[in-house]
Image 1: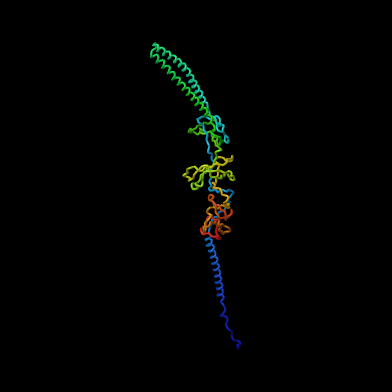
Image 2: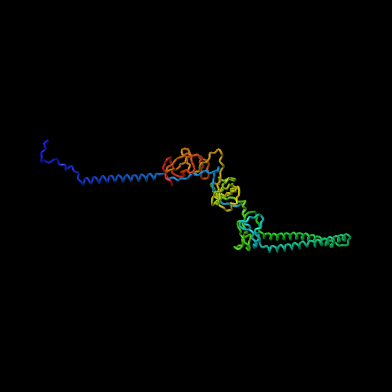
Amino acid sequence: MNVQHGSKGPDLSALRIDERARNSGEKSTAWRIVAVAVFVVVLGFVGVVFLRAKTPVVELATAKPAGEGRAAALLNASGYVTPRRRATVAAKITARVVEMLADEGMIVQAGQVLARLDDSDASKRVAAARAGLDVARANVPVLEVNLANAERELKRQQDLEKDGVASVQALDLARTTRDGLKAQIAAAHEGVLQGQANVAMAEQDVENCTVRAPFAGIVVSKDAQPGEMVSPVSAGSGYTRTGIATIVDMDSLEIEVDVSESYIARVTPAQKVVATLDAYPDWQIPARVRTVIPTADRQKATVKVRISFEALDPRILPDMGVKVAFLGEERRSDQPPVQALVPREAVREVQGKQVVFTYRDGALERRAVSVGSARGSDLEITAGLSPGDQVVVRGPEGLHDGERVKVK
């Protein structure tokens, strides 16, 4: 091909991209990339929020050891140590205390003197009653002498009347005199008995000035001091005491608890109980139900239960706080051992089987378990769990094995 020198070649300037168009295209691509990135981030954030909103929330509990006891605790309650025999000893009369022998913590025996009251007035009444008795007794011999004389006079009048010498009137007078003296002697003997009763009453007034313990026990309160006035009834003044001392029979200590009406059916007489004093939380005391009081408290919806200690101990004191566990029947030797205790709410029924959901590392694991007896609000697990496992007690329906959950 012939090329003519000096002629112009093809014009390539039309194929050149304008600099403004190039810059505009680069900016548009960059904005698209940024928009896509922002969309992906927002979509991921929304997805995470959505997934979190759908994650079930559960409440957990820890499986507890079954303990060494072979009997299940059916019910727990709390109450106080109370004595069956507790008395505030008071005087039978109104008088002033002259000697106070009782003191807090003193061990007393039945009949032991606790206090002595002023007996000066009572002693004078005894002397007056004894003087009256002496007078009554002295009248009897005088009347007996007169009666003997009247008997002889009547005998003479009867003899004279037979001889026709005495009149009937004289005979009747002698007989009346004899009968009157007999009546006076009978009255004199009754007067003697009355005098003896007056003496006994006066002596009892003196005895009432000595206040004694009604039974053996320990003095827990000293309520009067020497010089104070005491009375068996309130005198309407704060200066008169109505009690001398308070005595508790330590051999009659027992436990008194209030059991809700909803659970009283689980309590029976002679049922075994384990008691734990608040003062000694590590000391388990064996006891038994003595009686269930056959009435309910309408205000509290409870029934009072009294429990007797199987063996008393000096550490057990009146009015101590105590917690008790009412035990069920002892497990038989052929029954499987209890491995753990879980709340009743942890055990669910899935496809006819009893299962629990355990929690570990944010996920659930379904386990089939063997359930034993109930222990209050817990259930015995004889297989499938170990103490320390965390189990779901509350959560939505439809939980499944391996599901991710959040803990409340």
